[in-house]
Image (tube, rainbow, N blue to C red):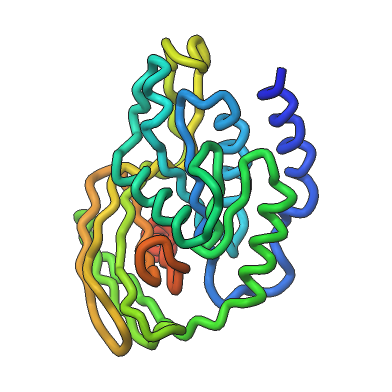
Amino acid sequence: MLSGFISLIFAGLLAGPVDEPDTEPARPVLIELYTSQGCPLCPAANEYLGHLDAREDVVALSFSVDYWDIYGWEDTYARPEFVDRQRAFKQRLGFSRIYTPQFVIDGALEAGGSQPDSLLSDIATRRMTLTDTIEINVNYHGGGNFTIDIDGHAPFDEAATVYVAAYAPGWRSVDVSAGRNAGRDVRVYNPVTALFELGQWTSGADSYGAALPESRAGVFFVQGGPGGPIYAVADFRRTMDEASDR
């Protein structure tokens, strides 16, 4: 009953304030959903994440965690390093515990999966405070190979970390046969399948190479230390789509 109620909350917001904004943001905001196929409230949060991804000012990813596996179903996308990433946000942002479903907004704010109104407010807040002066150019060379050129400077003096997250674009359905969601066809949106650290960056021009397996897209992002804010984001899938249209 609670899961259905949360689904109605999300559905009621879909036609309203998540419409695309009137002004272009400096760059898209990275929304990370921490989720599990064994979590009863997570399917509704994934549905909402998929709707948010239609906005031009959002890049949306889901990170599956493994701490629900103890209830009998092993999440097919979960990785221990994704839990480590969530714990780093906990330490940096100061929330009391890690949980699902949880949204992290550009590494700077967090919102519970049953608080979509808070999530929308946090996205607007983050957009208003963006002062990044980092330029990213993504070049696709075919065969899943990319070159990412970055230039500019981070807002703070600490070294930033450069990442690429490989993900399965769009919806993925999983028939869950055990655990808290036993018997459900659970849909997951843009699930991350691997997270790679490409190096450290402080300022100036630099280039990075990335290769993505077939059927995978990627998000390149620059982050201010473990659990820190996001400074720059580029979605490889969108770059590839734009290149194919020219």
